[in-house]
Image (tube, rainbow, N blue to C red; front, side, top):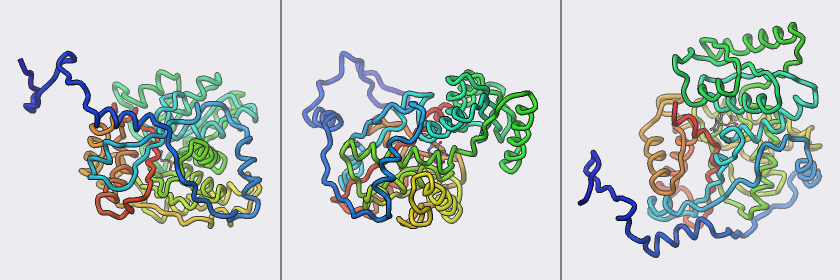
Length: 372
Ligand SMILES: Cc1ncc(COP(=O)(O)O)c(C=O)c1O
């Protein structure tokens, strides 16, 4: 007897599943097949770039990222969009450490500095459901450090998702009512820990410092070692570390790849300003001119998918979330990655991406937030 769900759709028991047809099998094979690409490189655009790439490979970082994270095709999504450009995804959501995501790459570098400075406590900030705060708490737990998180918002009666993990990881969460109060609360926590004889280390929002951004500059080398040189990378961009790192990495490797950051909150000008500042600061760490690095690539940001605001799903983000799950079993979160994927989908649907292009969606994680 055929069962149906509430929407009237037929439900199949395992024994009733039809054998996969050849097109389905081919789709799975394409996900597994090694990917080959034609390399489109440009000459060294910044003096010292080659030496900087070498420096990047050996820069001190904690081994938090199990690399390389997979890159595979999204044949289901491509088919759902009616063909068009080749769609790849880089799965930083699958980083095993602390439920993964882009913060692990940044914190691997920043926490290495904390260790080098003899820190025994990490202090940082974010929203109640901050992915960055959760990964910072995970890093502190594994290093045997104390962790103080300054969260803007109010305490949940029953913590969910990232807030639940923060508690499990043993972090102390202090609440402030607005973003504007965060910095003063960080300073208070730092002073208090120091008075208690601790050596606290402050990690700015999103670990988006020049040092943290090195994690994503290094990740470009990882992507190249895997083969792909995409024409365009789409990803979620907010506190700037991810995009600054990707842009710097592409510039240092001489790639012509466009990097499009999709904002979940702020307008283009403020994110672009932060990216420029972070890239400027990366220069001295890598032995290249900061201004040359910051000016090496156009900074492309799309703030057209914020909808009603930070963390508020939009029709486009809901659509992207469902489509990714139902076509390729990829999960994107409401706050960051669904909006970034929505921008990619809109560009493909509007034929703003040439059909012969390769587009890589850099999945920056955030899947824990789905359970908020
Ligand atoms: C899941 C996820 N994706 C993307 C971002 C944006 O990255 P960044 O802050 O480095 O711009 C964040 C954090 O803000 C995030 O948590």
